[in-house]
Length: 168
Image (cartoon, rainbow, N blue to C red; front, side, top):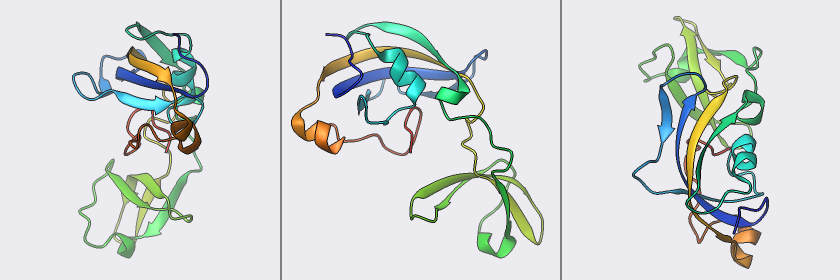
């Protein structure tokens, strides 16, 4: 059976690089497959679209443009915050920090610059503006159960931590 665009439970093994480079950004090769339910927005749209029609055991390279991955970089998504809000943190340029957004959600930010008074952070996803190249193998594919389709949870587990492909 080929992957459908809605309510299929799909397991993939992947390796992702920034398109045109040899640097691996993320990979689960040799580990647990990433399982998700199609049509639920659990992975980046361009990767999900590229998987459509693939069958279990099939492998291919899928190039995902930035707009269909983590979006284009927003140059206005930077903010200067008073340094005292970062007390106890050994700040370094380029480091990733996690905070809480206005709605209570976890927000990932990158430290752009800092001085004694303030810290400039960037709210863009670290992969925003980058085209990505996925080497993927479909390890499993089946119709979602009624519970899985309703909850968006694969057999009680789900995509953790917003690592590659997860759109959190």
